[in-house]
Length: 156
Image (tube, rainbow, N blue to C red; front, side, top):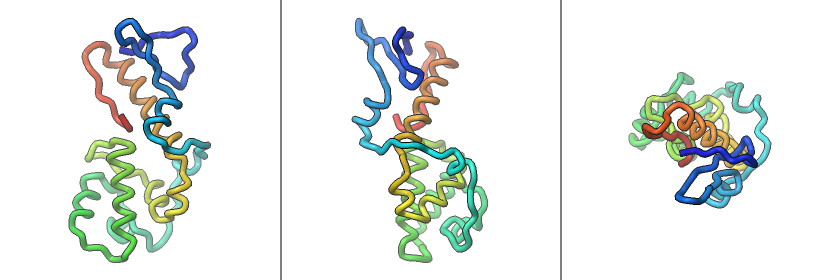
């Protein structure tokens, strides 16, 4: 259960564990994940720049694609280009492991842009993005669920 601590920052959560206060913040997240932190430009994840002949177009005709459809496509092992298995695997990895998406949710369009450009993908500050999502969903769960239980989405 989340507790209130006077010196808590807006980007961390404190828990009560026995007689101790335990913090979950960027430092703890970084220690566990070793993911890069940095500035995320909002326009990067809010706008999708369509590029012709990209993986999303080849396999999904640029339509919104749910995670379960991506899993099925990946399992078919019928790839058109040599780098496509890696790109599809990266989209799966981010969606299922990093973000922890439900299989019925759509893959964000901006993610296709990143898996198409591997240097861009590798330089993205995944730690900042995933930490902010994890923190948001943790705070949301604590705020709306009370003592019933928690559904945590994101990296946990």
